[in-house]
Amino acid sequence: MIRISTIFIAICMVLVAASLGLVLYSVAGISGMESAIIALTALTFLILYNAVSMRLRDRTDVGGQIADLSRGTADLARQVAEYGRRLTAVEGKLASLNHAGADRIQAVAGEINELGSLVRQLAVSVAGHDDILSATAAAPVSRPESSPPKEPSFAAEPPKLVVAPPPMAAVAPELPAPVRNEVHTLAAVRAAIEENRLDIYLQPMVTLPQRKVRFYEAVTRIRDEHDRVLAAEEFMPFVEAAGLIGRVDHTMMLRCVQVLRRLMVRNKDVGLFCNMAAATLGSPSTFAPCLDFLEANRALAPSLVIEFKQATFRNLGPTESEHLAALAQRGFRFSIDHVTDLRIEPRELADRGVRFIKVPAVLLLDPKASSASDIHPSDLSDLLGRFGIDLIAERIEGERAVVDLLDFDVRFGQGFLFAPPRPLRPDGASASDGISPNKAQESNGAVRAPATDASVIEPPARTTGNAALARRAAGPN
Image (cartoon, rainbow, N blue to C red):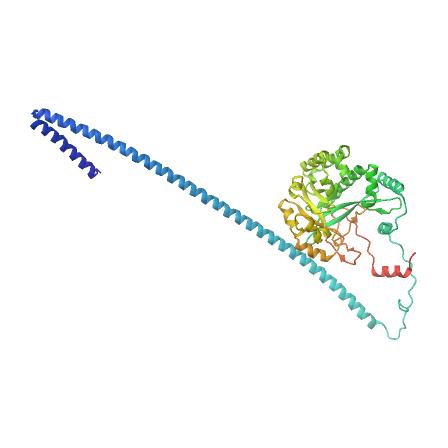
């Protein structure tokens, strides 16, 4: 549709051209035909000028509209990107909330199951005590009144009882150590290693507060010529002095792999801690056989944790660092024990492959430890957790320590309160055999029954009340 302004301009151009022709005809004395031609020519020029100017103006308007459309499109793209980012953030928050909710539900379900098992055990114990009390109360009633007393009481005249000694394996650690000098001890240790009298003991690590077995630590023991069991503190200095530490570590690593395979038959989530000495890590000739053996069993790397002392990590040389990197490259994780202070660099340890740190409970609960370190012991578990390292409190010997450690958010515990190191079964029973709960009695009289799921652990010898009373009556042999 033609606009009014365009019609007005056309009328003006016709009037201008007609006026020009009329002026030329009346004033200049030009003939009518020539004046009309000149007027038509002027009208043609005006029309061309108007058309060109309108075309230029329309082109300028279209360019501005295109620029405005481009700016609007860019703003729309930015708004869409912002909405996408916000939607991604909301989805991430929802996923994290769902994951946290699932973890909490799983933790609550685990605690409920533990409480259920404890209640069942309590019910069984109460029923057993009730039966014993019922039998005790019914015994005098069933006795005839005319029957004379059979024997005097035990307190009046204790009978002389002869008690057979328990097996050598159960009382071997309690025998007095024979007096020997360093030469004889070194000879005995060398003979025990040559005759393959190396034993492996397992001590569980439990989750807190559920006290469910999650890991085991392999502890080395040696039996001398008298079948007396020597702890690592007794023979390890002589082994290192004799240059036999590499052979001991290789033998224990071989047995740890065998034990781990037997444990994983029943529980795929179980883990085993195996100690390695600093001399083995720093000697290429000693470390090579261990590395080859671990390379052949790298499928067990997620469940086999190699443990070093804190002093070993603080004194790493080029050779030790290279060997440590070779183990980490094959997927093995590391643990640190024998911690003497809390000056720990979690980032550096995590970069080297450390995933567990075992700190004595006494050191964690010692008020002086916080003043000697850069972080309070109550915040140590959270700090290590940020770098993927779990804190394990070891040498726990009392219930009070467990309560205090729960305030420090410690997830794992180890100590005689839960179970002492126990030897493997000599009969080589399979991991699928059943096992009854074992009770560990400490020196302070605390008795606990940790829930173990590994049948490779030999239950300790139990001493009933009658046997203890008979041994006290018999007197020292």
